[in-house]
Amino acid sequence: MGGKIIPAMRSRSTRRTLVQALGLTALPRLAGAAAPAAGRARVTLRLSHVVARETPKGLALENFRERVQAASDGAIQVVIHPNSLLYGDEDEMQALQLGAVDMLAPSLSKFGPIGFPEFELFDLPFLFDDTQQVQRVKQGPVGQELLALLARQRLVGLGYLDNGFKHMSANRPLLAPEDFVGLRARIQASRVIAHQMRALGARPVVLSFGETRRALAARVVDGTENPVSNFWTQGMHRVQTDLSLTRHGYLGYCIVVHERFWSHLAPTDRALIQQALAESLAWGNTIAQRANDQDLDALRASGATRVHALDAVQRQRLRHATRGVHEGLAARIGEEWIRRMRGAALSPI
Image (tube, rainbow, N blue to C red; front, side):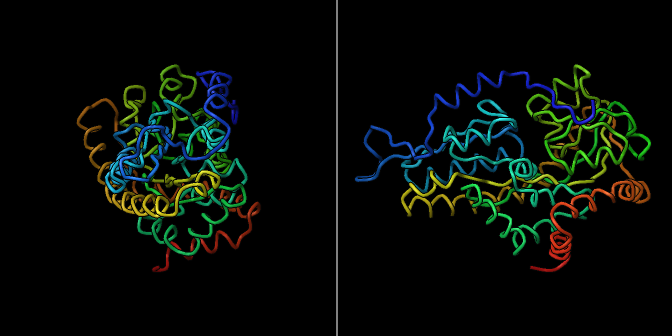
């Protein structure tokens, strides 16, 4: 079952019909009603994402919506569809390309399968020691160069958002490589994460985030990896007995729009959206760790899931077991990218 893609529990054909029905262009929609400001057309920006509103990403995007609507006096309306209600992992990129949605906040892992393997650098296990190192990469030349690569497919990367470090969950503690043997682990569609799981002896199963909890409950998969905020807000603590604080990988997002949509906005609207987004991403990045800490406290208080902290020796054993994952990615994108990523993480901006 390793590497098998489990069919989504919602019909892809139904979603594809919806994408086509919503239109094939990515132009801003102009409402027929009078605009709030004289001579200014109303713009509606449709934003879809796959996590709960109460997560760091969900809260940051709500903050963005409020900032845009206040700064534009209501001329720009941001309509948010959270929690995979409109599109999920398997079809949100297609929806953006077709113009059925205007803005996404996909995890960085999503860009590898659509032709940007350089973004898989963020998936490397045990690459970062703390969020300060992640910020150095994203805010520096390497992070900005990665955003610029998106122009190859007429995508515009507007910024990065944190969700923090991932931990492993299952119905048993996962503290050593031998604990992973035979585990059917839900993963995103990332070759790096699949390689990581195989290196630990687990069997990776690619499955959309919105279907993960049900798959865990049905024993379709045995475990997964998530920041605590996703684990808690998705109710995974009700279907997983153990959470091991491995802090093995980073989960972040890229805010992206299609070039066709972006170029048809008025320059003043683009500037307003960029400013509001920059402020909201900065705010969201400051609350991400706090939200994870608060959710970890809530998880422990619930008593529903046993929480296991790894010591330095245990983490080093996991790091050693996954060292080949770095070598595998270097063979695909070049050692220079990994060297630059490591150097950026350790050097001040």
